[in-house]
Structures are given as structure tokens and as C-alpha cells.
Length: 246
Image (cartoon, rainbow, N blue to C red; front, side, top):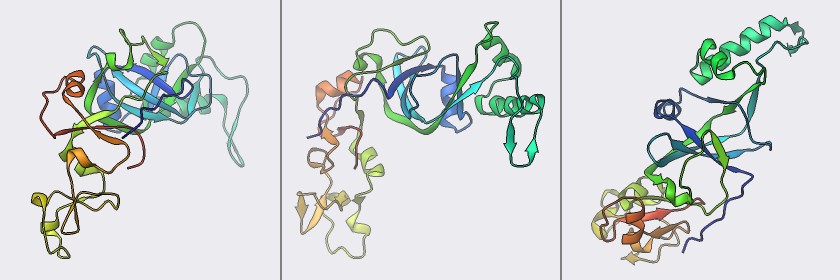
């Protein structure tokens, strides 16, 4: 039985993002998300992505670093590599190009977003992007409204929900004994499992069932679980997958 994990407020964040930017994040085209503020700690952070207007958290990414983006000129030159000094203007132009490319924003858009305060913007690094198999309704996180920009999250880990077929494609233990030249038998219509902890076997071959998955972070989903995610329940079809080793 998977245990629910309470997340630390210091390393988990919910961030609001428009759908067009989320699509670019998924496509690997947007490795930098621009915000006016950043968390106080160094990170890394697990960032849960609420897609604006949907009522749903649709995935997550890891933020391991932050880039300070000055909105007023720096006062000193910096050495970018040994034996090569660049002027303030050259450094600013280099950073501008990288920021514009990574954030998918033009210089004018960045300027308008920064406003006249003179405060720096912050580039949140984006990596390890994951789209959930089923979007998570915001209510599962105990929230009635999404953050305007971002907020810390301190609550129980919300599992992803997926079909047993979807789990089989990613778990790393599934195989079809009928296609395995070393297998003399093919029980359970080819839904087989190589996990050493699998106790549901026929003729010594592990069988893949929704109700007997040996992974510690996977439990069967019941009708109530499916209802929370807006899914039509089917017997022995869906599983809840929590974070953790498979």
C-alpha cells in the first residue's frame, strides 16, 4: 500500500501558466520561465503547473536554478572567461539574447513586464518536465482558486491516475511472454511482469494485474478515486501512481 506523502512547503510550488506557454514547455522550447519574484531558498524546487483557465494542474517541472535579470545597467564589467573581458553593453546583449531565446519573449515584452520599478526579473530554469496522464483538479490540492503567479504548496502528494496499460508502458517490468523466446508459457493473455516482488504467477511467470501490482508507489483506483479526477470508472482498469521508486 502506497503511503501518502506530505510535501514540504520549502520545496514544492504551484505556478500558474497560460496554455500556450505550457505547450512550449512540453515541447522543450521554453527552458526559462520569467517571474518578478522567486522563492527564498536555493532549491531545487518541484513546480506544479496550473494551466490558466482550466481548473487543473496538468504537470510539473524541476527548477534547479534562478537567473537574475537586471532591468537597469550593471555598474561593473564582469569576466566571462579567462583572458577575455567584455564591456557592460556586450554582457547585457549576450544575456538579453539568451533570455529572449529561453523565455520565448521579445525584449519589448520583457521590458513591458518589468515595468518602471527598476527591480530585477527572475528566470526560473525549467527541466525534467512531466505531463500528467490525467490532469489534476485544483480541488485535490485543497485550493479554491489558483495563485495569481505562484505560491508554496504544503499538503499531501496528489498521485497521478492512469490505466494499467499506461502504467505497463512506463514501469519497466512489463513484458509479453508470448513474444519472449525464453518463455514456454504465456499466461494472462500476454500481460506479464518481471518484477521480482510479483507474487501473482502462473507457471512461474509473473502476471500483470491492476489489483496486484508489486510497485510500492502504485495502488488500485476505486470508483471514488475516478470520480475525483472526472473519469468514468471501469473495474480493474485504473491505478493511482504516487511519487517514488518503481
